[in-house]
Image: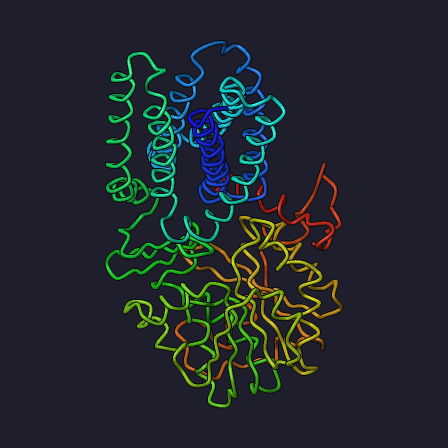
Length: 516
């Protein structure tokens, strides 16, 4: 080959690598969008990968029909990916905010398939173009596929470690769309002598570029107004951490914290939740020398624990440093948690709760498990027999644990499955629930290596809601929330403990909450 042909072939290999990076970023971006907006991350990533790959297969098949004008076809495919992929996150938030229920899921799956199909057309065309330039078919196929696979790895790493945490999902989509467009315009320019009506194609490309740049700089602000529609109150803080989307809202003094769209607390009634979470278990434990909180990065549970003068030390394990930083710096949250996370008795560790219990050799008098609901695989492991066995193994003989366990009204089978899972570790359990207006009726499971006698528990610290007199009433469940209503075909179902091998809780949870 002459020098010009070598340069053109190298451009094709670089183009295949870059568009592959963009393709994998869009693929995982669509999975992340589905996980955030539709829930059940495993389900959404599975559907995304399946639809994207199916689209690629169909696109590769359709590429056989492209017999001429290979470069123009490639350029316009890139234009299409740039526009559709670039505006994907922006339009997804808009559809979620304004369109009828279910439209968002249909839209996400459709664009996933469509971008996959366009991506599938790209590589066969590039292989054939490289072969047309003078590279042998074996060489062109091997080199383009190498660029494609290597680009896939790079794209995945970029999304996880740079794009999602630094730019968020809206800006990332626009940025990657700009890269697709840049590849198209570069190919258009370097092969301009082979392309008829060069000016027309360039004009369309520049117009698309203007749209993408406007979206890159202003799209997130507009998407913010869409997302505001998803929340009852005005958003006063929003950030995308390495692990989740963190949102604070405020309306007439009511501060609400959301993680990945799920409400974590409301300042108007959080005390009802946290007093039941903390004080019965603190009153049950024989000592308060060493207290462990798993979750609770907002610092409110720690505030309740510090009401006890005899507390020795409090270890708080929360995976996301961004939540803890917000709780330590935001004025509204500081007022709510009374600066508990800055107290000398409190030691904050940023680690997965499961891994922390596996690695620590400490024993605790009190273990409070204040973790998000088990709505995905990563959270489900924190509601398994294996996890609660670790809790038991780090609990002193006279100690006690309290576990938030979702709603026995809205998710009756979920609540009693969690209780049965805790019980399967050999611990004794006591079931409690309380009405929290912002959440509804909410359940807790108290567990200990010894039997729990609720009649001997006394609440001796200042509280706004909980008292010794009403404590026993929290253990009584109505007919519509008792374990005896968990039936199938009219017959009582024996609840199965949730385990790592048999993670039955995820499907139960999804079925329970789909109507709420």
